[in-house]
Image (cartoon, rainbow, N blue to C red; front, side, top):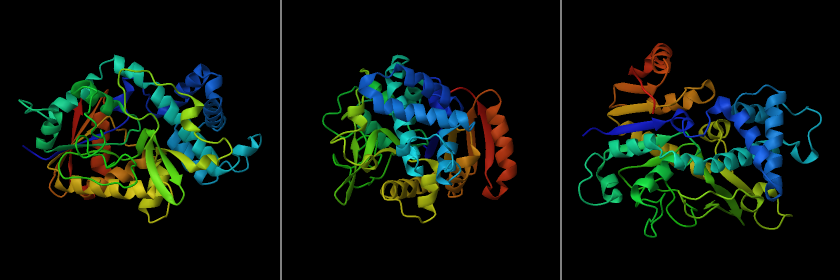
Amino acid sequence: MKNKVYILGAGCSARYGCPEAKGLVAGLENFGRTLGDDAARIKQCVTETVALMQKESVKTVDDLTARLRGGSFDKLSGLPTASQSREGRIWQAKVAVAAFLLSREFGARQTGLDGYRNLLFEICPERGTGNWQQWLRKTKSSILTFNYDRLFEIAFLISNGPNTDGKLLYGDYYLNSGFTSLFDDEIGFNSGFCFLKLHGCVGRIANMEGRDLCYRSLFGHIHPGESLEITDGKFFPGDSSEPQFRKHPLLVFPHEKQYVQAGGQHLVYKKYVEPVWKKAEQIITEAEEIWIIGYSFSAIDRNSLIGLLSKATKCREVIVQNVNGEAERICREMSRKHRDLQLRWEPFERAF
């Protein structure tokens, strides 16, 4: 059995109601209309993020936040005083995206998430006796995802059963995603199967408690059969006078990750980004076969993936799974632009 690595992009979740980057503005706008008085502050984050993207013809939130960080919108007039700062607008975008994706989970669950479940069965072909924890420990595969959503996790709980017997879903007993304790104050991994969320995850916040940074869950355990209550109380906990920027959704936008990887200090995300990406590099180094599924190779974050692939010393072929001619186009473009990788790019045109 080969060491296989599956790298997932937004196309994997698009068919289950989590739109790809180019469809996010419309999705956010419709989501904002559904929010009531108990989510007024979330609605403000959604409305102002959408308004800025529409005003400046920005298609993706990754592009929006990168341009915000670069100061492109510093001189725009008509913005509320509380939202003038770059960090304030980026923080609003995080809240808007996190709340929106969480709101899509119940509908996604109703689809059965067969693409994600099929992937689970593929990485654990020898499922005889035992349970999912034992099967994952036997597999030689790992999964890296650029997606913020939790659809893979929900698919796992559908297949495994929602009862995890008190074990942490993201801990080393199951998904081995780096969260090793209830307090999530350190990121660590065991050997074997890993499910790494390279850009962070909805449903979690980075919370400063005194001088200590902890990554905590907003909703406790994931409940795949229930509709989540998206209210201000989840995203704005505690005294309303508390500075809002002490609680960040654990979404790491490309410009933030790139800043950390270039040696920059980021109070909130450095503690997460460095060990997760270091583990990803280790996994890629050991890979004998790499599949890239539903990933668009967007220019704004392409170099991060190319940097990972440069560590693939044992793998000579990358299979790109996508639809409607995209797989062929991507392979043709990558083979021409990144010949230094010495990888053979093989298209596999099929929906996830």
